[in-house]
Image 1: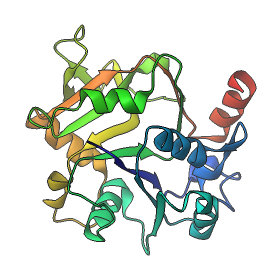
Image 2: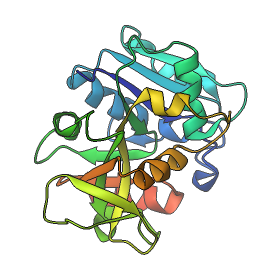
Image 3: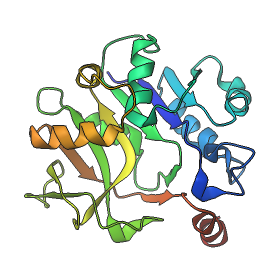
Amino acid sequence: MINEAMIFAAGLGKRMRPLSLNRPKPLIKINNGSLLSNNINKLVKSKIKNIIVNAYHHPQKIVEETKKYSKQVRVLVEKERLETGGGFLNAIKNKCFFTDNPILLVNGDIFWINKYYNSIDFIRDLWNPQQMDILICLKKREEFFGYRGTGDFDCSNPTDTLLRLQSRKGSPYVFTGLQIIKQEIVLKKRKKIFSIREQIIESARKKRLFGYLDKNSWFHIGTVKDYKQFRDNFL
């Protein structure tokens, strides 16, 4: 059973300035709470028992934000920016997780609405450790609010629920920021600072990367323009 998670909240939020000058981007307010608290609440509702939040930019504000979740949430302050992969590896090496089971990872600048089902429960139900090393939640690029890239992944079986993915630019599918990953594949990395995307690409090469198309609405709140558009149109 996957009941541990990590939220990446250690970015500088440069594209969100000036809103992020004096606070981390995950503390930008959405509805009556922050992006971070919204995601923590979703994890708690899905009975995730141990939640690690990494912090670097104004880390004490992350600590203050998570105090009310002290039974389930631990903040890991980084002395240097390790990026997502390095941050996850640092959490493993600091023995932040209770078991060596796969971990649910959540990007700190995403928001979604569980309209059709609970996306956390859905991705956990699809997880198959014999078949995959990483399972990622996807949206079609034109349906992912705030995304301006050229696509992340393609697959050969688009009608299936579970998709074996190839990493390819100019593809129709985009990574939302929610995934499940085995701890042991990250422990093999010899670098200290790296993006989790490196591991995703490697898993795709080994044919151990899978994804699914999520039906719920997903939002990447990456810039001030995105935030204002989201606030004006969806709140």
